[in-house]
Length: 251
Image (tube, rainbow, N blue to C red; front, side, top):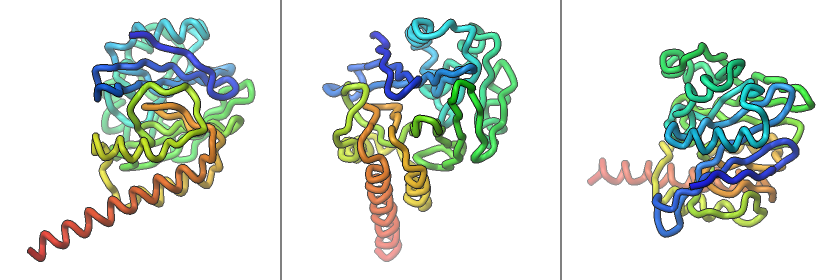
């Protein structure tokens, strides 16, 4: 395996590792994102067993000791499995996550105390980069879920939203909704919370210019339209699930 590096927005780098053994023949990518600034931030740590690949990739962009902030979408191995490995090689790095994630998991599992972020709280990275943490509980899964929005570039770091198969280009303006629907059909990874559609539509109000996907190509097309279409699909799934339950009760 190798980790490829691509700049998907000004000062935002995608570190992508393709694993053909997952969901063959298409395979699956695991993406981390490094946001530069006076205090660089990494979104997703990657899997613990992929740490050497990701460490070497980051070191080709910045010295590891410059890494200041580490955050992710929700507590899961591919999102934060290597958090302590990163803390070990980055002495000034601090983990940052939402209230639920910190108090349920991270406070106990992390080797250094994390910074607890409020919904909407901003970390100023310097150099013109500002990242806003946004709570998205149960969207797409995990009660501690959240996303990060980099304000200067309009980049929404989506976590597992729009998960799709394959090893596409680092950045695309093609369809990401159809592949995301197919990914949901295959993995059934979302919790189908009744608030999912509304939560995703709230993200669309940010009017992002780039969507940074954890699994799949990042997107530079009509981001608002893509988010609304994904919200519509989750509303449909939730309605279908509710109908199936009602029919089961009436059977």
